[in-house]
Every structure is written in structure tokens, then in C-alpha cells.
Length: 177
Image (cartoon, rainbow, N blue to C red; front, top):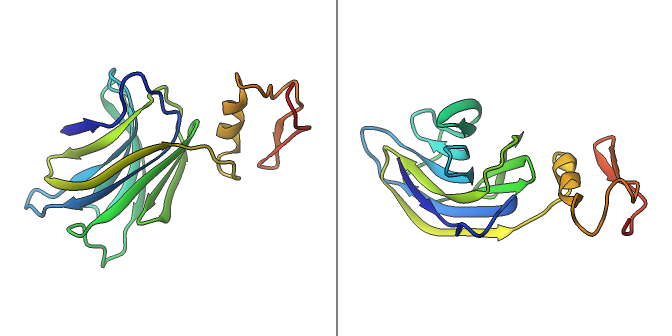
């Protein structure tokens, strides 16, 4: 496996939008490549992967070097891996969203303390035209829990301000507690 880290060790990205323009170089061994939505030196990771053989985009975890549960979405029959595609990961706390060419793909909640990002390939030759990570925080129905946990330790104290999640939305009195 090849890995290129985008994040210096001093930078911790628990909330980010990371995108890369990737292109597969066709080979008889197939192709697996994508983004680390989260990565740590101990082998823990959350990977957003384009998988040529399965014709899918996948999101899965690795804990202590062992792959865990996989969430997979089949790509259209006319999806051409040898063309340039933008693969993106939005992370808010424990909520991960994967987008292919700006189209929503996979949403999942995954707890991890890993906080580095990067690009990877597994037994594949790929081209990477751009890789960018930006601090990012979003509130929506899918990530309300992840958003609320980010308020802990900020100038807004969720419990003191009466913040809570009800019916998949963040509600509260507002103001600092």
C-alpha cells in the first residue's frame, strides 16, 4: 500500500472537507485507491475507496491494522475509473460523508480518534492532480450528534445553554453558557 499524508503531525482534523482529483491507471490486477478520511500512526483509519473490481465506492474502518465493516455503494455501469474523478470526504466529529464527483454517496457514523488525512492506493497505479483539506463543520439531520459533540469544550457549553438533539435536530436556547 502507498500512502501520502497531507496533514502535518501538529494539525488535528476532526472536522474537515478533504478532496482529491484521482485517476486510475488501468492494470490487469485491478485497482483500489482513495482517501484516508481519518488516519493514525497506530494503524487506525477510515478509508473512502474507489474499488475497480467491485465497481463501487466503499467506506470502511481499519483498527489495529484489521479491516472492519464496509459500507458500499455500487457505481453506474458507465463509470470510467481511468477518467479523472473528484473523491471527497466530509467529516464532522464521528460523521463521515463520501462524495464522488460532488454527488452524495455514503453517510456513516464511525467513532475514531484518528485525525490525519491523505491519499492512498493499494496494489494500484494512480494519478493525483490535486489534494486539499479544509477545516469544516456542518449541521444537518445526519450529523447532528457529531456537531453537538464539537460544541463541548468550545465557548458554548451545550448543557449550560440547554442544547440537545431532539427529532434529529439541534435545539437550544443559544448564547454562551
